[in-house]
Image 1 (cartoon, rainbow, N blue to C red):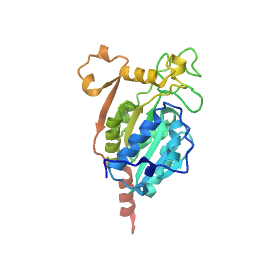
Image 2 (tube, rainbow, N blue to C red):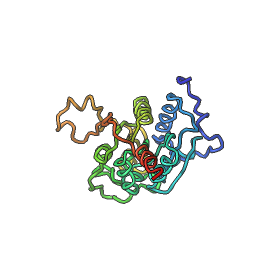
Image 3 (spheres, rainbow, N blue to C red):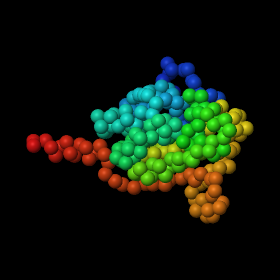
Image 4 (tube, one colour):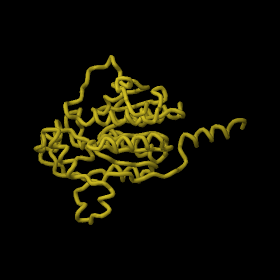
Length: 273
């Protein structure tokens, strides 16, 4: 059963209005997520998926799980409430780099700090794609966007370091170019007890690529391939060789007390007082 996957089983058949641009990486990421759920043989009834605003926010509308499409930057806050009310469920958050590290940055870091049992999938396409192409906290230096027409000079967040520093207990990063490895990381994130963050580097050739001479999906994906390096290879490279490269792989996998379990233990201990 786990080998063959009928994707239609996991998709809402009455929701056919696909709103992603041709060549968008979001479809491959959604496919990796559905395959991870399928291979782990998790019931759809046991999964809650929460998303915010942005192209990634469409995912909650397409899939036939328990879903919630929330306000911009707030899916982690909604997901925290769901997890506390239904601690036995798998609670998954989909958000973009703007949704999670800018507008929702505070919710993101405190979910990591609390080590609440959420699977947070951050689709990092380096730009606010759906809202018109404004620069985000991960837009590379020198890249032109709608709000940086002469090139971005801001420093960038490293989402892996942000999640690690804030306290997430499973942290991984992969590109949309490697769906098999991405599926593996999402499976491990779903199985991990605690706050799991999987960053997926993806492409937005419409609102980022075309402003930077990479208007086709293929051109921007080639740029991503050129600027990422697996951890196993990075370990053999010098600091000079790693300048401008983004390392992919698994960065954190540790056990720590989980927030929801601590909360219910406290509630139990207070009974009868």
